[in-house]
Amino acid sequence: MTGVTESASSPMQIALICPFSFGPGRGNITTVRRIADHLPAAGCRTTSINLDSMNTEKRNELLAQSGPDLLHAFHAYHAGPTARQASLKLGIPYLITITGSDLFDSKIRNAPETRQTLIDAAAVTCFDSLVAQRLEKVFPHISGRLSVIPQGVAPFPVQNPFPDPDNNFHILLPAVLRPVKGITNAIEALNPLAQEFPSLRLLVVGGAIDADYADKISEMAAALPWVQLLGDVPYQQMGSIYAAANLVLNSSVFEGGMANALLEAMAMGKPVLASDVLGNRSLIKSGENGWLYQNNIELQDIVRLLLGNPGLGKRIGIAGKYFVEKNCSPKVEANSYAALYRRLLERK
Image 1 (spheres, rainbow, N blue to C red):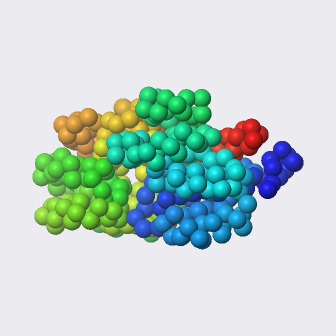
Image 2: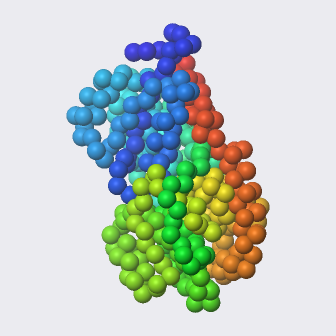
Image 3: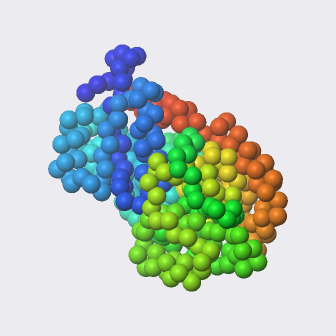
């Protein structure tokens, strides 16, 4: 097995354990792909262990071939147990990145598997300091092993422009279709504004994860011509969708840290409006680089303000872009993980 202390130039072998690798574009998929793309420049060789597309035999075979020095699992419940079992078998450390429901969904958070994987992990990471505070309250035993590593982001290329012959006001809501994303609540809150402002359009981009919830959204959209369901748009094509947006909305009930969709919107210079929940507070300073809302009235007031003052949206969008350029570099993100890997391996 390669040891990182043998040579300063020896690349670390890292196995990234991801619960999801295909299907609707979840944040975990985006996060793991981005980190995997940037880790080689930080001195790491990576192998992706995708739990939704590999059986146990295939995982073990790939781990044996790659000979990892360390395992990095994304999600304490969905990926943590696999990392823990492989760690015991291979005699190497593992770390857990908290991504959202493993902290904020009570059933998942309180599951014995979640607690055990966090107890045995060599380190735990999350995306921002506010989530870290919550983590240490819920799981006090991880104190001293917890690191905050902000997510990175880069702007998308714009390929084919989104068609808009009528010059409408587009609110983009990028989210997979499941209840925690609060999509039905957002539609209900925006409906009075759509009657008041005929140019308002809501573009919902995301694949179905919860079939019943997706059916409910489809029924609502069928009765509301201002709502368009674009489905699961390939990641490479999202630049054109973001470019067409006048405002990007996040209506989530909870966020595990810096939401990828908000980061992407800000990187594209688009103003953002997000529910005032823990993960979103770490990214948005309301009125400075975006807006937070606590209820439907606040959501409606901000949208109405932007409909009447497009220059304000442009100014806030520029401020958001500056914020992510300064604080959310994918290179810095990868270097931070690589530095943590080195520290953990030096303790062996």
